[in-house]
Length: 292
Image (cartoon, rainbow, N blue to C red; front, top):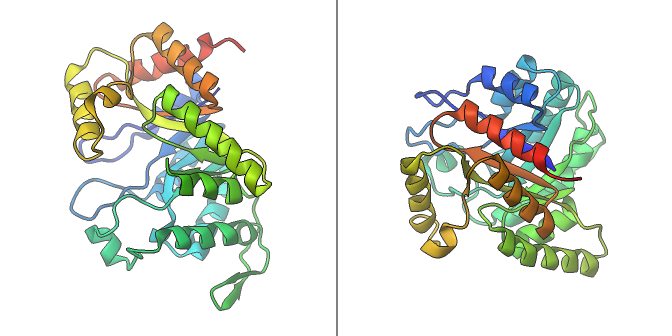
């Protein structure tokens, strides 16, 4: 099972590149970088620049946008950034994309991002991205654009739990990335994903589950995360308690196996709370316990 986690940050919100090297040594497949810039002072660095820094600090590990908010940027700019990262990293990019979760925030307004029609914007961007990245003449609005030097199109993973996101993944992506979902909830979604692929005459995308883990005894971190799920996300408490991944390596391996049984090909878990180094090791050990 493919395994990704994000980098921890210091009190300023700056990621620790030394931790990326540690993940590479532990055998992780990719380093994930969220794309959340709200504009109210909450720390949130530009994901493409952070991944470029990770590329220079590592040799093999993948560089995963988890996920890039497409409506925030002109598609030609996104394509140029992906081309650049592919060349700087030797083709290690994994391009997770989504419609974004904070429309109307100060940053969205400041950059002139669309507050409505984000799905249509994202669909149009996904349609244009492969040609732009490959250096092919591509129509963007009224202009034909050719970007160089051409680069290999990275795997494109479409984020979101909705049926619209699933349909978008089938039509434009290589993978679908739901998040904050239990294995049981994932199984029913994967069944629908396969139906959609059949209806649209397209291959079934890979399934890449996103979530959060707290793998040490840190009740404050666990209760804080559950509060986010039951508060801003409006999730019932019983459902929320089934979302975070907890426990030792053996228990985490059981959870990873449950996701795999439900149809997941990959898991990306943010590590919350204290002792990030130890948690990263436990998660790597759990993946090693999975039977082929």
